[in-house]
Amino acid sequence: MIQRNALASWKLLHRDVEVILFGDDAGAAEVCAELGLWHEPVVVRHESGAKYLNSIFARAQEIARHEYLCFSNCDIVLTEDFRRAFEKAKDWRERFLLVSRRWDLDITEPIHFERAEWSRELRELALADGHRQDESWIDFFLFRKGMYASMPAMIVGHCYWDNWMIWQALAEDAPVIDADRYLVPVHQNHGYNPRFGRSKGVATDPLSQLNMRMIGGKRHVRRIDAATHRITRDGRIRHVMVRNYYEPREWVRYKVWLPLWHGVLGATRPLRTVLGLRSKAARP
Image (tube, rainbow, N blue to C red; front, side, top):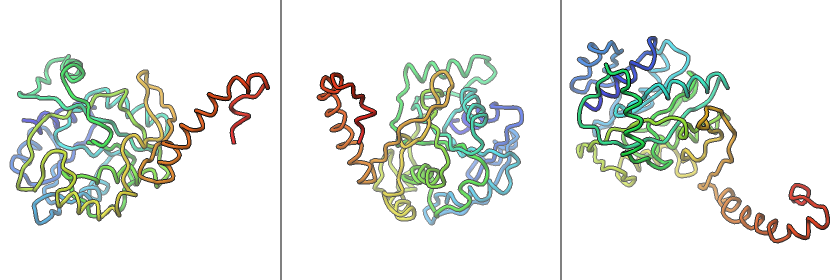
């Protein structure tokens, strides 16, 4: 039910949207036939049964007919605020990565998509009763075709691959846009299959640690708060200060040097006013 809700919501984003579903899991072929989705049953899997992302991304780039792609986990419901965020980003810049924090919500029945107000009601329910996860939880990535042409052999459903996605975009000098203030992607709460050795929020399971090794360690880990830009509530795209606490130099800068410097500015403001100096002129 959760996956059907998600897939149906994607299909409704635009009349020309193309949804490609990867995997031969039970029911996948049937739901693709029912909703008119492209089914790619062959996916490279780890011995545990979990899917490798690099095979999925490579095949999607090969067969997708549109210039922009979005990878999303199959428990995320997207609505027209997602489509509007994409349109604003595309009008602003050709090449970018769009991400957002998710809202966890208990959904216990199929969404009635025939209702004209379903998306507004779902958004209001998420804001009222849902839980917004922190910047480490990233469930969709929207980017232009050609990005992520080569990826480490990471495993979906476990930690760190999503953090690497942000790092890689930054490494390629692509703007990373945080749409958290503009849209509400709804994650439908569910359990985790112990067959894949995963419990919710556990970053120490063996496959998460495998991902960490494949990306080259924590120096290649970034969260949403490493975004270079943000979509404001009124839909404007603004540059933001980037904080990368995984790099010691950046940690010292943002946690030690900048607070100290602002303290010095505050303490010396009366004297600088008398002398006619501004903080810009006093900046070292």
